[in-house]
Length: 208
Image 1: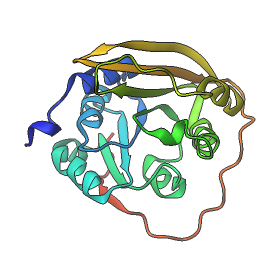
Image 2: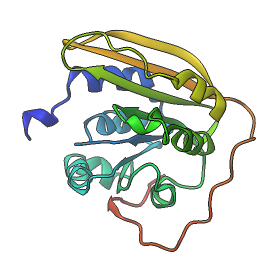
Image 3: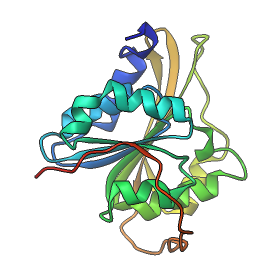
Image 4: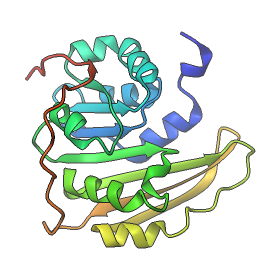
């Protein structure tokens, strides 16, 4: 396994902030090699499940290969899809609402023109009180500033900010926000998906 795919301090830190619990259903957006997804899947065992998505097919395949044992146990599912391709990954994540969603350095959650759509999808897929954990860092070691307008975008999408983070993690400056979906159901309905094949690269029957 290449060193780049080994657990780095930022992986351990972000999963600790997410705080996966036994039996939870979680989603990681932009899973890369699947390092954090594997850590989280081990913590929701024996009856929880993590769905990990990445828009790059090579990353999705690497995540599924790295975590083959967790996939076989039904604790982890890996899908080649972007977060905006909701109909693709949602079919794998299941009909039940999620307990948590997390992402590291995924600008679609705060980039103008994309944030509104991404946060609306997150709100729709999370159960009331479910958590959205967004993280970012600076490789040069400087402390990062929060993305402009993120708090306002979260509020407009149906989230309340619970916690803000800014610290040094493994020589990098890291930041993040933990937000909770407000306990109401006034969220945009899911669009009717077009019939397209699911690009799942790592699934196994869920065992109960």
